[in-house]
Image (tube, helix red, strand yellow):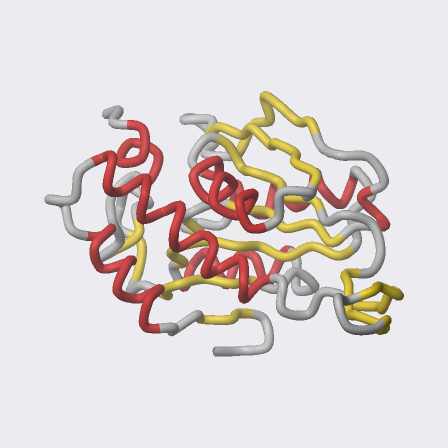
Length: 210
């Protein structure tokens, strides 16, 4: 673990991730595991949320009770695979605002191209959590954060299931101010840009596509 990267080693996270890596795991079970693990990762990525107190009445007496401070946080899914993490986090934080960033890789230039961008207002006043199961080359993730910063976001965190060292390095170079929270730091990328040992293509395994 570094200051830039938080590796979540909680036993439940690691156990569920192992089940997800297994190629015998069905699409339905994979989706359910992703939903469960996203909630555990959300617990970690929201650990430092600002707090204040408000006056309430318990059945016994009034008290100044802790509550979240500031505007509702924003969850931003990097399409399409980010939606798998998004669903689980929304169960934990149903009041969060939600945005979407759509990027695809140009096969000739290998650079990310934007095809969709819709995010909540007043990003400068919100904690923004960008979610994508895989941090592979880091090019799409860095481009997505570029777009969020252009939209006004100043407090951004990146949440992923798996990260490759190459992706971590790319993000640190492009956005050293954006902490990364991940369940695993895998060995390397193969020649096709897949994380190894990884779990295959997260979107295909989640949606049953090839």
